[in-house]
Image (cartoon, rainbow, N blue to C red; front, side, top):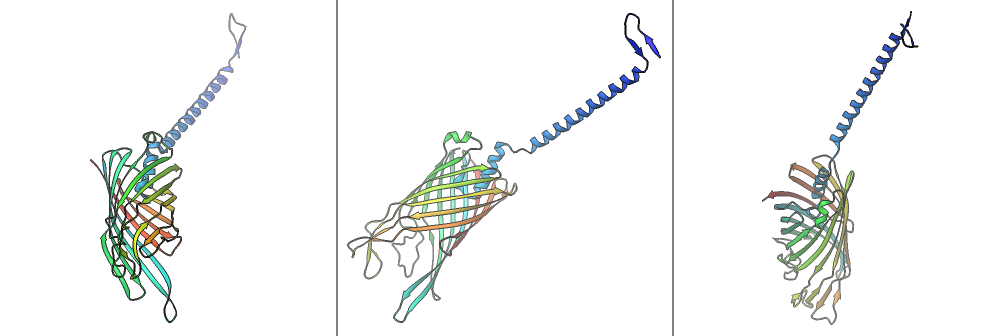
Length: 346
């Protein structure tokens, strides 16, 4: 069937109408398919966005992982009073070969130390915190099979403050650095004022100062951390400590000590995290001056190193209990510690 349209040179066939309808329907179907695909992509994008972790959430997770390691890597918000209870047990065996009239003898000594510590800190600013630590020490030493000593007393009280540079509070994802200064007071039982045959010391017996820097950075999916420190003990003068019937100690010149630690932590879930670390400390030789000798005696340099693993368990939204085990790399000793922090916003 053919139709002529007047005033136009176009010839319209009746069969063209169904063809145009099919083309239009096909076009509509394609548009509908594209709309569904776009809607699907939009929903997937929203789902991905909802699963993305914001910088604020990353910062909170990093803080939780680091708090399970130590307080030195984080600072609390302004007006926060923090109280930590810590319990540490350390075991340190040793062996000494000595000469008797008959033959060489091997003497084994075992040292057990349990330390209960109360750590308090208050944040005057978001980047400035002061702290005070009070340890209560129980020591039990056993030498051989029948000689043993025990002592319970307060340890050396320490005071300090930590701060962060103001601009660091505004750099998400960067390296977080915390700087600290501390002072320790000889409130514990001094090793230079006891009878070593019947008593044990619970402190160092001297004043000391320390400087340190702690650093951390989140590198998904882990948080890496490291710290550097230096200790400066003041030493002791005018002593009159009888080492034996032959020698009297009158002066102690302790050396500078240096410390290094590094490790990484990983959040297993919202409530649990694990961490591992390596610690190293080096101290130069101590000079001991005796009344009966014309020149000081040097003890020699000392080194300590340990490898530790730990876990953090979130028991409340604001409380993370941490447990750690450290094994000495230079001797057969180890230490086991736990820490329970409490934060109060005043």
